[in-house]
Every structure is written in C-alpha cells, then in structure tokens.
Image 1: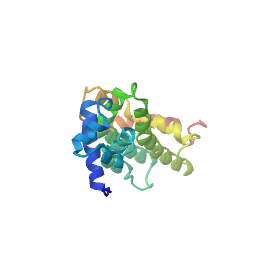
Image 2: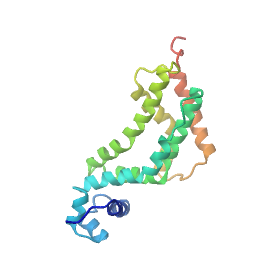
Image 3: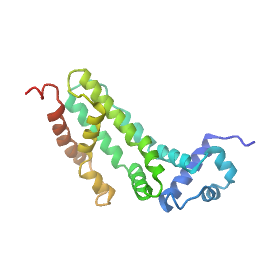
Image 4: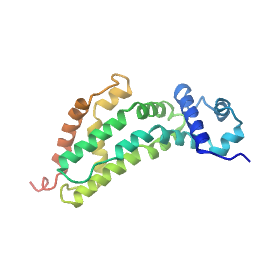
Length: 205
C-alpha cells in the first residue's frame, strides 16, 4: 500500500488546478489529471474520492495565502469607522487578487453545467467571508457602536458596498490593478453609507 503524503497531495492539487484553469472543469477528467500527475487513477482516488472533492481542495488551496492575509485582522481597539475601513480594504485586496478572481471566473463559466461547483465555491469562499464580516459587525453591535439586528444580512450589504463597480470591472477584464489609494477611495464611501444606516443611535433620529 502506498503511503499518502502531504507533498503528493499538494502536487495533485496544483496540477489539477492548472488543468481546471486552462481547460475548464468539464473538460478535465480524473484520468487526465492522473496522466499529468504521472500515476494511476487508483493513486489519485486514494487522495481524492471524486473530481468534486479535488476541485474543493483546489479552491481552498488557491485562496489560502490571500485568506490568511484577510483574516489577519487587527485588534478591536479604535473607532468603528477605522475598523470597517481596514476590513473593507482587506476584503477588496482578497477579492481582487489574481488567485481569487481566476477561481471566480472559472466557477461562473462552468456553474450552469456543473451546479456543484457553485456550492463548493460558495461554501469555501463567500460564506466564510460573510462569517468574518458578520462576526465583526456583531462584536461592534454588542459594544454599542452599531445597531444591527441581523449581522449576516448586514454583512452582505457591507460586502456589496465595498466591491461596488470594481468587482465587475475585474471580472470582465476591464481593469486588472488597483493601487492602495484607489482601494481606499472605493471603501471609504462604502463605509460612510453603511454607517449612515447602521451606526448606533442613527435610527432614533
């Protein structure tokens, strides 16, 4: 029996990811991946029970570094405006990175024919992002800084405000680079609009 190793698993994910990106999910079979890896299908299935499971591992791997940068959030001190702007900037850098954008495009291109891809991507991407944002908003609500009854719903609003305009421009290839200043210029009004609705004390006036 062959011993499974983390090095081999990562090699398989990298090779499969390159094939998914260049050929599309539907055009790539487990046999094709096995041939590129240089082993048998039996060895491949020893690491991943299905192509869907392998794709999920690719999604996680593709965004691992960017995800770690996103969740490296500073402490809870400081004004809520500053904390939201930090969160928004981190989110935009994560979303607009080459790694995350390439997976977005792949899923959009293939999801109609392979609906499972949307679920895999959502579970390993947007749902996790919303969880981080919602936790931040809930903490601020508990601290009396925000007035939010449903942090998850509010997190979706915050996410949409931060990515307004620029996400589509990146997705469609209209632009492929933003400076830190440009990211801040997109996030600052997003935070202002968000706080106009959810800052504690606003609704009473």
